[in-house]
Every structure is written in structure tokens, then in C-alpha cells.
Image 1 (cartoon, rainbow, N blue to C red):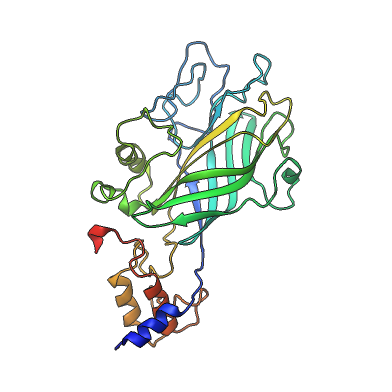
Image 2 (image 1 turned 180 degrees about the horizontal axis):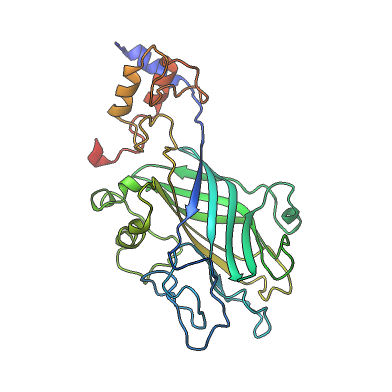
Length: 342
């Protein structure tokens, strides 16, 4: 295959859409979590370290003494003590569940959010995404929550920033009720391939917790990730999700015990076992568009696609590897490739 400057210019001018990858992330929870949420009215003098090696002990909490990873931090600002409902609105709420994101190289959207945690053996709290038309849209949410930016590259540290609406369904009233709602709630964080989570590649990447929840954890947040998080990922995990958010409720049940000045803060740590890349030009799904991807495309040139498929354009494919696929690869050349990988 011979390319001249004219054909290269033509390829660069071609506009090709990116097909988003829909990926489900499971919350990473400690083995001792068991879905029990710490309670504000535990035994006096009892404390628990809810995140390993972090300075977040909550006195009066009796559950999760050995820690968990994915949680909801309810900062007791505006709590109506001493009459707030027992078992809710203070402390760290450990949850399990999953979140599904639509991701491409430029954007990220929340498709589904389904977290849950047992407050008592018979009572469970839920965290749900607000969808257009949901009853939650009547509680100061706009119902159009999805939107955000994503940049998967070493220079951008695989960073994303996303805004969405969500609500709490707690056991305070019957299941299916809305007890707190949040409008345009912002998550900031990153999604990074597990293959990059090693001392060599981490030297090229700067990762931190945007809200500073881990400021007292250690001098090196990246070392904490390697030592305390990566070691607990399943062997088949492909990518790690780390997100943080903090906001006042846009509406809350007046009987919930928290005022509108109350602050909800979250750290979400999850993983996926899905083999994916947010960029279709990354044919071998190693989170970089390089000579390996070009070689795969060249081996299938002017043919029906093989495995992995180089039929990357248009988004749904056209059953043939041709100039459209090459143009898309050229347009995304060196996406995600760090300086030491060139």
C-alpha cells in the first residue's frame, strides 16, 4: 500500500463519528463489607477505619471495622440533632452495586446507577439515577442529567468530569420513595486501564483524589492505589474507575434529619472486566493507537474484517476494511500513547 501526501490529506479531512462504548463498572468493596452501613448510634467509644489506611474514623460506628472501598460519606453538616432518624444521615454509608457509563474519547454519560446498602437486616437504602420522566424530576431535578467530558490519554491522566441527577431511596418510608434528590451532581475522577497500574507506567501519570479525602492517607496517592486497591481487584479486571463528588441536596424529606445545608460526599471505586477502549481506532484495545493497530488494519486491507476487527468506520462498520477505516485510524494516531511508548 503506497500513500502520497494528497491521499493522506484526504484522510485527515474525512469526518468519522466515534461510537461510544457502554461499560458497566462494579463497585469495589472490602471483603468485610457485607453491605452493612455504619450507624451513627453505635456503641459509645467504638470507631472503625472505613477506608484502609485513611484518616476517616467515625466514632460511634460499629460496622465495617476493617474497611471498605466504595462508599457514600454523609458529612453531618446541618444535621438536626438529637432528633434525626436513627440509622441514617451521618457517617459513611458503604454500598455495593454498579454504574454503567457510555464512554468515548471525548464524552462520558451515565446510563444507569444502581447502588444499595443494608442499614438493618430488613432495611436497604438505594441510590438511583434520575431519568427523564421519573417521579424524582418533581423534586428539584431537571431530569436530563447526563453529560460530561472524557480524555483518555497519559497527558490527561484518563480524566473525566460528569454531571448527572440522582436520588436516595431510604428505609425511612416505604420502598420506592424519594428521600433526597440531587440536581446536576458532579463527579470528577479517572478511568485507567489496569495494565497501566504498575510502578513503571504510574511514573508517567499523575493521579489524585480531587476532593482531598485522601490528603491524610499517605504522601503518595498513587502508591495507595497500587498497594491497597489494585491488589484487591479481580484478576480479570480490565479498567479501574475512581470518582468523587460532593453536593448539597436539591430536595430532602423534611423528616430525614438533614437540612438543605447538609453535604453528601462520595468516593466511588469500581472495576470492569469488559475488554474495551473508548476509541475504536484502538483496535487491539491496549488504550493506545499505534503501529500495532496500523499493522492489524494493514493485514485486513481491502478485505472483510478479521479478529480483532479493523472495520472501525463508520461506527456500525460496513463489512469491509478500506479508506474510511484508515482515515479514522490516522485521525486518532498516537491517541493514549505516552512519551515512553513511542
